[in-house]
Length: 92
Image 1 (cartoon, helix red, strand yellow):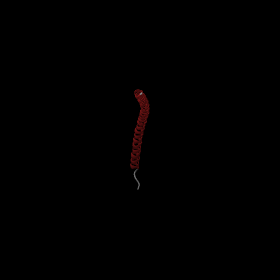
Image 2 (cartoon, rainbow, N blue to C red):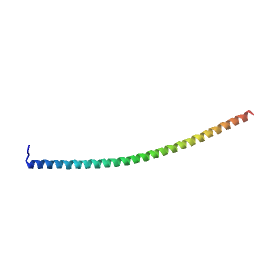
Image 3 (cartoon, rainbow, N blue to C red):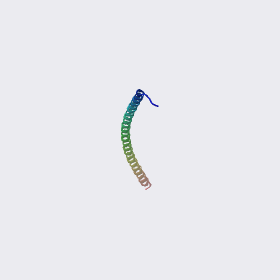
Image 4 (cartoon, helix red, strand yellow):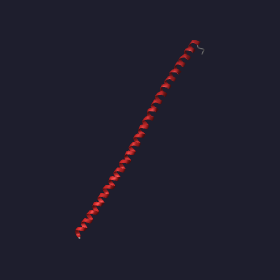
């Protein structure tokens, strides 16, 4: 089938416009994706810093509790020895 040149040119122009519109949408999608990736990267950095801080604080709290427990155990042992020696002094 033979088509008149003006119709062919109109079809070509419509195709070119559609291609430009598709390219513009692709650029927009690329920009949005890049912005989302940047935000995700920043959120990841914040999450990592928060996790490191929480880990550090947990280790510090664990060490503090260990020290308290050790000190209290030592006090209890000293009190037990003192009570035992006091009891033996009373027996004599």
